[in-house]
Image (tube, rainbow, N blue to C red; front, side, top):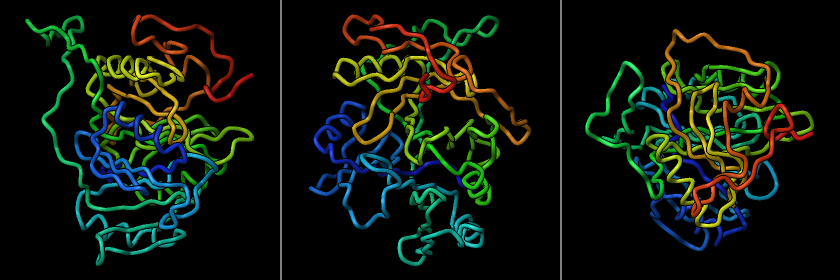
Length: 321
């Protein structure tokens, strides 16, 4: 069983900006050379940055800074055996490296390199703040936390623009992913196992939009850390794309920023958890479907007030009139 994202790799020519950004973002620096910088989240999920011309990776799926590899963690070696016997073995670039480094490697229909290995993330005794919904008081004699910055727990999900939605969905389903919800013909939310968070992967097809990275989400403890982390990133001078806000489809709170390593980057918390009993839903795209509420332009980290306000203009955030 695939359990989630174990590591990701970006490439960028905005080298110094990227190093500052991930330090501000709250990752731990593990190793740095002239060609590669390795970071980690609290549970050991790896985040690496390489140069765009690194020949040890396949050609990038788009020009400019972007994602170059996603490493998916599995439960045990038997899961790697099952994947090696699955349609993954017929994917482009398939390499069975179990005897060498314990991995399977292949490329998805977009050309993005995927690796599969036994999960290296470590369990943590971390809990978000309890809430006091009416009729279910859980926080007694204890105020909610205030965070001055975020420390991401893990990489939660990846969102890709696709120009071959049906083919990509079929590929990921063939290796065990499950559809959670979808915009018919436009986008599919997929989780890596029947019992998992709402989505580990979202594939989004927009008219005239080529393959590329939309965003990578980093999971934090709770809504308070979404706010605290976002305010810190704002104080550091990085630009908000949208947020804070809340997604009605996954129930998650978000705050999106522009990322010097490509696409957007998100602080994310309080995502729905689904079981095999979940019945997939279909949605018509629209601003209120994407965000129940959202702050346009973000909050100023110093004044703690909204920067600007402008209503959405398209069905998707990336679709402007």
